[in-house]
Image (cartoon, rainbow, N blue to C red; front, side, top):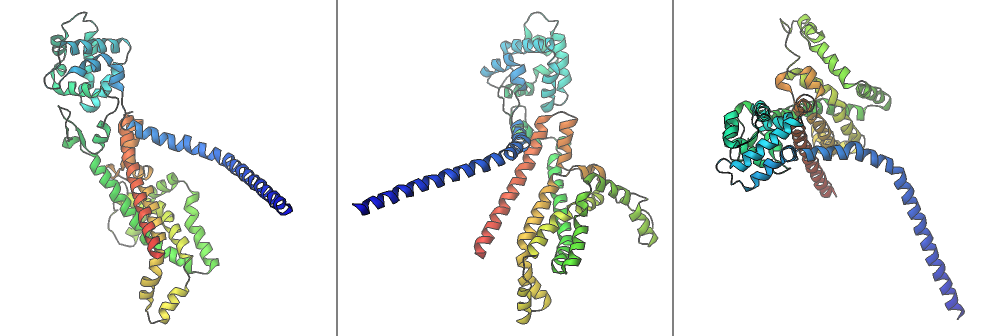
Length: 416
């Protein structure tokens, strides 16, 4: 009986101790959560929610559904073949009258003008003339007021407005659009610019990333192999650009590369060129300035990996008869690939979103996707197009990051 009592006491004490440990652990987790909560809220409010709103705006537009409710409701019975009946025209006339009275005609005209260039002014003039029209029939009257209302494509546009969601902005971002019967067709050549913009953005980003790798890899190797006193001094020179704003560095490149700038003066003094070269407001200046800004982002991840590689591996290869280059290429270089991949991915992703440097140093044919996002946001006030371009760029970035993670994961499994 005494043994059973002792075991029972130990069991109860053990349960009590376990419960106390669990309570203490829950307390620690709660404290950690409270400490992290401000950062989580900051990221959600300033990063996650705006990006989510941008992605939503790329496919959501309820302008016609909200401002033309009678027309969109009347078009629910339209078969989409011939022009709508008198009921739809009467609903359109009433919506335009209400829009003119509430001063929302400009919003409707702007939305229609997105898909039918030049139709915005016709919508506005039609609403103004309808404000004096008291009674129908409206079909003949509207077509007489403006031939726009006798065209099938404008009614197809209004019919698509029955849904608050649209693929127009995403289609327009890849140079496609809706045809007269709501079919997806290629945009006219004079409006087909975005595929070239995306290819240009991709090409410039790849070129800058390759340039930073070619310049940064030897410097990273030098920093990793030099004595600490010397490498620390060189590292300070590498990170000094981080202390200067990108605007100041970009402006400095304009001064250096202009027609009578330092670079042209030096080249002419050395008789390398006989007249000033065009080094700014073109692709050359854009790539040079971006490479200068992005170089530390590629160099530092490579350097951090190189510092972990023991020199004994190369010594062992040399002692077994390998030459200097063979030992470097077969033994040392493969171990640097994680750093190379991380640095190049970081630099490439940052290049995709460049706006300031191409805008200041590049020419008209050197502007990247971010320039058009800013244009639609600040000048045209077309949030749908700005969001669609940003959403495509964000999707491409996430896809690249996913591919990188997959490749790195496969490599780690192979090494394991």
